[in-house]
Image (cartoon, rainbow, N blue to C red; front, top):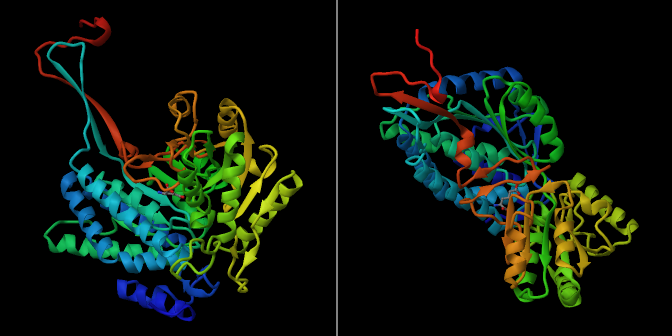
Length: 509
Ligand code: UN1
């Protein structure tokens, strides 16, 4: 691979080799940078609002054709997409590392997550099943069918710049929908690369003799104006938005105002409880990955750790050691585990949270800037021992800060874990069956994801992904999340010769 000082050149080469038009990469208003060095990678040409409107109209027209293609045939497109992603895994993973700053194995892991959801969606394309429901009327049959719903708008964040699109798009496309994607302004290049890979799959699909309407999918590059246009567009019945709670607060009501449906995957303030019986070796590794991995920039990142008094000193001492020794630096260099923050604003936000933590009585290990290249923001992850759950602990700061709080009573730890506005992911390290089951019970963790003896981050695609409260309530990815991308019809069929009415109603004319 290339040296660090050729990142813009290398990126350009990868993009062009994938088929991204050169004209898209120069002279535009969306500046793509690499957080590795802060260098500009490209000046991407944005879509105008007219172009965005036209793309949405085209997607709507394409939907009207695509919805009638048998679902398993739609699945063939996603099977080919999975193949193309496998073929391009190395280069797309590399681009994720360059544009989002993820360490190599996480950049590749993100592409693997895309491949996994494609496999899932191919199987799903033969299983978009409804129910047959018992009816009270003789010679009748009642059933439920699932139909494609229309254009799905996908708004994604910088931290999973391509996988989030794939969780939505792979499902939406097998469900018979069209997909219009507005990626983060911070990561336009991985989006264009992904679109180019999708175009390869589409070309192969056509070469196999399948029909696919023009404009079924689109990527819209641009800022808030383009996002708002998508959110407000009446041709877009479903908006799937991933990002901050602030963004969700703006998107949710606007979509609801036009009776659209939104799938919101917003902020998390994820916690883990470490109980007296925990396997501390395993806990240490679980906590380290969940809290420091991806430089704390996952929505599932572990941000709050409640440690029982009896194991506190043993665990926290070892954790501090891990925080002091973890390798921070270029994500392209093998062995580094923590890459850069996405930008200066992220760094400033981290420092502000650490100041607030100190003011609230916290004692901080780490958090300082390292490798201070002018426009690159590498920091040592911070471990902050807090006297109580106050101030910045209640907020999601998108940076590697782990707040640690001591507890003595499991019920108190559980109450603290739930006592934040967000409800994405949670975990409990314990070998006590009562604690584990209590944690997973109706009165246990209130999050969309609750784990035992693994950290809160790094979920597989087979489960539904999302959370409660300020996390927005949406579910993406596995389980029956596909239902949000379809409309449900209840059908009652009378195969008799009389017309009995439900509820015993008489209406004899
Ligand atoms: C996100 O951070 O936006 O569970 C998504 C995880 C990943 C997805 C994270 N599979 O950490």
